[in-house]
Length: 216
Image 1 (cartoon, rainbow, N blue to C red):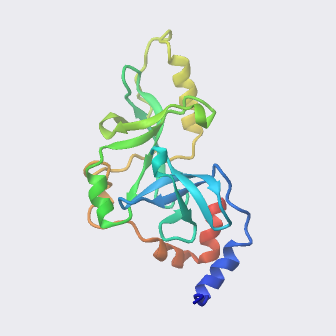
Image 2: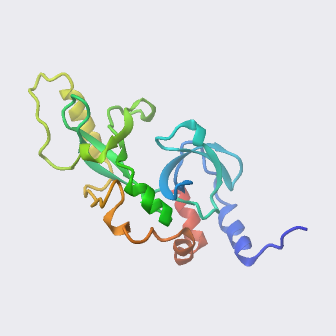
Image 3: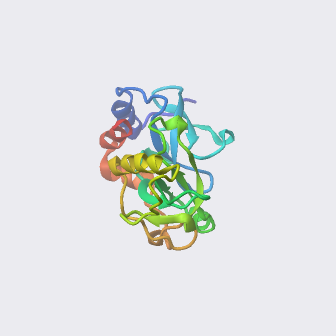
């Protein structure tokens, strides 16, 4: 028996379907199976409503199809955000970078982030996204962004690259404020309860504004 369309379903169709399709390379936030909000990239478009996504920093085995009408999916940087910082990596000088902050969407997500000690780092060492060095690094290797970084002699081999990466970081719209971590990569503000759910945020914004945010 065909399910009767509800008023919300009709409103969702009206507010979403007329918009341009998401395209490969677009970004969004997706709640993973561990209850953690992650950044994900669209790698395939099945319809106006369904896309195949790749979790940023994860193996391809975790790629999946999601619906933008799902309570597991939100516009890019609704529950995640980027932060400017310095990262100590191997024998490099402190490197200007961006890290992705993830938040818990469930109680399980709180527990999982509290035992995860790594954040995903983008070293911005290349203007081409696919050619950048990006990897997981321990929080202990991260330093708050500021003017005091590891100044090496002018002839240090990577000096020019550091300066170029720094320029890209400075141009970024990412936050310069390092959040407070409680344990692992769990933020202090989420020690007791997870982030607001999609249903609550979507209701407060209204479907039209909510779905429009996917295309910004």
